[in-house]
Structure formats: C-alpha cells, structure tokens
Image (cartoon, rainbow, N blue to C red; front, side):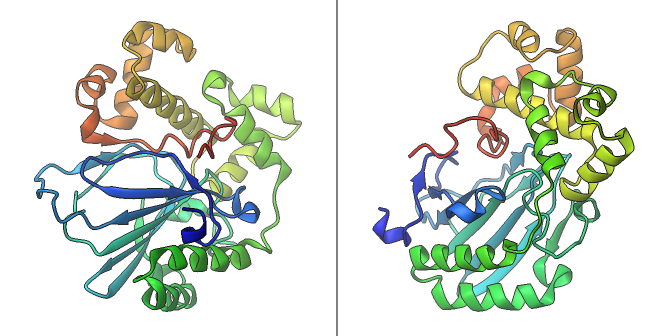
Length: 290
C-alpha cells in the first residue's frame, strides 16, 4: 500500500460505520503540525442516515476537501471547544480528504493569523485565504481521480507552506504539560514550570492553539475519557479517579459541558459520536502505528 500512496505511510485510525476510509501519516517535515490524513471514499451501499454524527471537540483544526460530481469544496474547520454535527454522507460523496492537524499545528497555514480568530468556526477556504484556495483547488481538481497521487500532492503543498513557520519552544512545553494525567495543573503552576507569565502563556495558547490553557486542558482530559470509554473502560468512577478529577460529579459536569451528554450517555451510544483519539495523543509513541 505504501507504493500506491506515494510513499506516505498507512496507519491505523478511527472508523465510521459504513465508511471506506484510509489513514496516512504525513511526511516527516509535517509531523509537528499534522496528526494524519484521512481519505474517505464513496460507499454506495451505505443507507442514508437521518441521525447526524456528533464530533467531540479537540481544539485542533481540520482542512477538508470534499469532491462531489467533479466539484471541489475546500473548508477549514477552526479549533473547536464545542460539539458540532455532520451529516453521514458517505453514500453521496465522490471523495473527501481531511488534513487533521495537531493542537497548535494549523498555525502558519494562513500566515500569522491567530487561530483564536477561527475558533469554533467552519469557513470556506476562499474566505480566509483566496490564494491558498486557488492553489488547493487546482491540485484537487487535477488529481482527485487518483487519490494516492492527490494525497502526495497535498502533502507537498503543505511541506512548502509550513517550511517557514518558526516553532515556539514554549508551545511544546505547554503541549507536554497538557497531558490527560496533568489535567489538574493550574496556570500559575505552569508559570513556575516554564518561567513565563500566565498572561504570556494564555496569549500563546490563544494565538497558536486557538483556546485558553484552561479550555485546552479540559479538552485533552475529556478526549482521553472518550478514548478509554471507546476502548472498553466500564467503571466511570474509577475513570474519573484515574484522570485526576476531584470526584465523579466533577467529571460528569466537565464531560457534559464539552460533549453535551453525560459520560454514561456517551457510554451507551458511542456510535453517535466521533472523537479523534490520534490528535490528542501527542505524547504517545504509537500514534503512527501501521
């Protein structure tokens, strides 16, 4: 499969019911920016569903190219801290390519535009960056009939795009400290760890991640809870303790505030939700498992 994908490595990933999907790691220069690529192909056998899919917030951002009957629609989903719903349309699309960014990874895609300006928004790419929209439309229109070639072409464009982005070492420290097991770390504790002011850290988070430190930490922990529930964890009281919540009531309150449902509701109906577990596994060595 490597040779068919232009050299990009196939990896494991999430699965939608009824969808034909493939997941690929980005090329090495992009692994600090992009979690993975998702290629969705039309599945004519899937029955239309009246129930939308609820996307769990991950504060990361996603660039989406949907092709239908030869027409290309490029959309950028900004870093989100609220659930949103999407239609299960795998029986109608020709192809969809998703560029799934890591937290903070989308900064630089639109020059120096702060990501908080795109927080909780879904924008046509043309409305944000007309020149980039034209470039990507040209690439997608030329190659969508052979999606492995398209995948490599999009990766090549993004390598050039992010080549000039200057990494902030402080952001790397912030992402490391925002692990699921460090969810109780307060901002003033983080300032002591990094020697930067709370104001400076929050400004960096808003600019490069799109949300505040406090919001990001909650998003990371709740996504980890979703991941563990999806992988079979049944005891929610123990899960709350493992993720360092004060008690189960605090866990349920934070979970519902972010996901719109309680942990037990999520546990009963996991197929109604989609959580991108690979995006928020920044510190796990198996993110690019083949």
